[in-house]
Each structure stands twice: as C-alpha cells, then as structure tokens.
Length: 597
Image 1: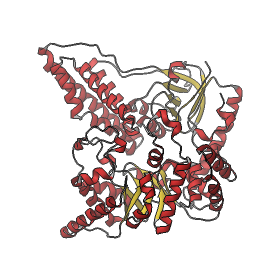
Image 2: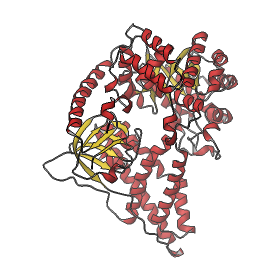
Image 3: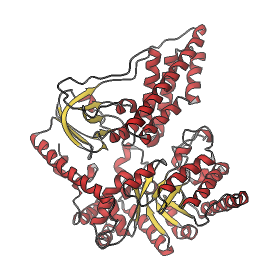
Image 4: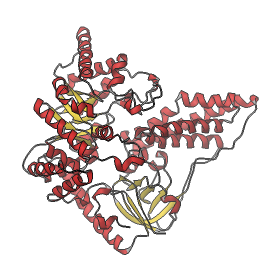
C-alpha cells in the first residue's frame, strides 16, 4: 500500500530500504485477585520485580555509558527515579493489600493512573517521560509474569538493512539497535525530545517519530524512503520520488559538511554585523556539546531538572555545582541561568501544588519563587556563589510587574549580606534580567527596562499568551502563528524598549531557531540569539548569508502585512534572495512538488 506520512524529524539522514514492522505491546496482565493470605507474598514479588528492574537498568546504563557516553547514559536516570517513586510503589502496594489484586495487576493499574495524569497535562516534558514510564512498566511486568524481553529477529538475508517501523520504541529497545542492520527508525508515537529519539541521534540512525498510524498499515518487506531531516516516510515510492530523494540526499550530505566547518567561523552577517549565538541547555553536561557546536555562551540554562520529580528541595551545594559546571565550560562568555520556572505543567512533588483550572495562567514562574522564599533563596545563593567563576546572568521567568524584579533584587541583596558574613566569595557584577513572555510585560517594557539589565524574549509563551492558544494543544497547532501581526507588533515594541533603555535584547524561543524567524529578528534589530545546540550551525548559516540591511527592509514590509501567512510570504521572498531554504531541517522547507503525495 502506497503511503506518505509526515511526523517529527527526530534524527537526520535520508535512507531507502525495505521495512521491518515490529509489533509488540506491554504484557497483558490477567485480572487476577488474591486471597488476603497471599498479600504478603505478592508484596514480596513486587519488591523483587522492582529490584530486578533496577539491576537491569543500572547494567544498561553502564553499557550505554561505555558505548555512547555519560550524557546518553543519564537518559536512564529518570527510570531509576521512577522505581524509587513512593507514590507509584505505595499505590501499587495499597492495591495489593486493600483491593486484593495481584502484584502485576496492582502495578499496571498504578502506572495507568500516572499515564493518564501526565497525558492530561499535555506538557511535552511529561509526555516525553511516558516513553520512560513505558520502559519501566514493561520491565517490571515481564519480571512479574516471567516473560522474556520483547525481541525481534531481522531476516538473515546476508545482512540486509531495514527501516524499523513500530508503534513505539522504549529507550531500552532503542539503545540496543544495531546500526549495521537498522537503516532508519519510523514510529507512530514519541517526539523529537523523547529519550528514544535522543538515543537514535546518538546512534546516528535516521529517525522520524509521531507518524500516528504508520505501523498499522505498513508491511514488512515493502520498500520505503525515510527522510529524518524533513520528518517524512514514503511507502512504495515512485521512481520520480526515489530520484528526487537520492539527489536530495547528496545535497544534504554536502550541506552537512559545510555546516561542520561553520562552528569555528565568526557569526557575521553579509554586511559584517556581529551576532551573538548562544545555546539553550537543560542539563549541565549539555554545555560541552554547546561549545562544540560553536556557541558563544549559554543564553538559556533551564534549571527545572533540579526540582521536577523531586520529593525534597534541591541542596544549595548541588545547585552551585551544576551552575558552576556550565560557567566553567564558558569562562569568557555569558551564561544566562533561568530561575525555577515551576507551575503550569512542572510539578515538583515537594511543593504539593494544588490542581488549578488553568495552570498556565496560574501559579507559575516567578510567582512560585517569590511565594516560596525558602526555595528561591537557596537558588539565589547558589547563583551568587557561581558568579565567582564567570559572567553569570540571572534570568527571571513570567515577569509581569516591576515589583517582581525589585523583590528579587531585595532577596539577592539579603543573600549577598549572608554570604559576606560567612566569607563566601561572589562577584557583585552579575546582571539580572527579565524574560518577556506576556503581552503585559511588553506593554510595560519601558518601566521594566528601568529595573532590568537585559531582556530575553521567550517567543513560545509570548505567542501562546498573545493569541490565547495553548501551545501544547495539538488541535490548535495551526493557530499557533509566530508571524501573526499581533506577535510581530509585540516583538517590535520589546526591541524598541530595550534599545531605548540601552539594555541587551536577545531571543531564546523557537522563533530564533527557524531561518525565517532569525531573518525576522535580525530585521527587527535583535543581535543575540539562543537556540538548541544542534540548530546552531544552521542559524549561523542564515546569519552569514543575509545582510542586516536587507532583513530590515523586508521586515518593514512584513510588519505591514495583515495576516500571519502574508507576513511569512514576505519573509520567505526576502530571505530567498540570499539563501536556498530547501536543505534546512523541518517540513516547512520542502518544495511544494516534493510534499505532494
């Protein structure tokens, strides 16, 4: 059956070959009940299964570290934490005791509750962890039911290579794939940031995820093309499509070689205007990868990894060491560290956050930090101590009022006094800035600029709050419009307010990672961007290809557009005078004739 499916580009590369469809599922658990006399035995069996799973994951982590590196091995840490989660384990134990369920049935039910709760939040971070939860669930249930690991055997036809198609793949399954037999990976579920996708990239296996129902219709042995750069799978391609993708593959490989050479070249526009390209990171260990991709510092260090999933406040020393690591990787560049952006969909267990009708409009960001000073003070002290090692900038999320900035500065001054009293060194030259993420922040930007040392536009939330479109709601995806006239107007106002106040303006949202967005921001007068490390080479390619004068002229026209589509068309025409967009990552860059089915 001929099919074309578009998903998310998870690991780059274009391959063609026969498919191998792997059909597997979580073990089916008998709906058994037990007698009260058997409860102790089932509790013991659950404990043994959890311990067995822990042992297996620790071994797999060690194997991964040896094979792929320590950063990739940390992917299995969340699974180990899940096996220590008291809410999960106590819940399963309660089902055994109070409902007289078997250990397998009790554990299955508790995992179902977790999965349902995480899906209800709709947040990408928690949805990505579903992949890990699936791994843990499968491993524990197979131990309890005495089943073997899901295995698949590729045909022994002289080492022929296949495109692996599946409904989903767990991290454990992905890390064990043999690149010598697997050409590419195509799965119905998942996202680009799931751990399975990260492992596919580490293994250099092209992958497309989020293909919805491909595995239901695909048949083993059928020929397919997988484009891991554009996020497309074509089953039973035509001769013309095979020719087009073969030529595209050659061009992409040449392009990737060119991008590698860009890491050491300066980020200068065609008319010699310098641009700062920094990286967004989630973990301290990501800093080295950012440096290797040519980052000029860290523009957004998300710190939620220190709190999400934790049952206790993070220790100040742990935070200090984490921040210090990133700063020491960039001793001559700025490192922007965002204070905890909790709430919304990020629930540290120790806060016991109450359910909210609209969590993204509720208790989140700076509001949580200021309301829980014992948590915030620990982070501020750790940040202050880190200033002794480099250029640290404290970035505050979800700012709507100047009082939120001034109160934070008061807390910083109080913690400075305590550090002085204790003889702990820090540098008073650090800067405090504001993430501009709401229309309110934009409309009061002139006042905010009097209290902030810098602005950083968080485009994802700014678009969400301006258009009243939940960015995690797939049903509204086509209404999330970065080039909507209202969004462009707010970004222009923010840039002008920063320029008037003489403070730095940078952008750390997804718009900066899109070639059209980079072109737009250059034209608006932004000269500092922060994007994920993997995107840095492509964005540097854009910067070096376009003159700022041309971007400015094009943006003046785009700001007059009445619709998002019209503005995007103006930007597309403007950038195409300087750059061939067809090789950039993402579906949008495909030529119309290639996207036709």
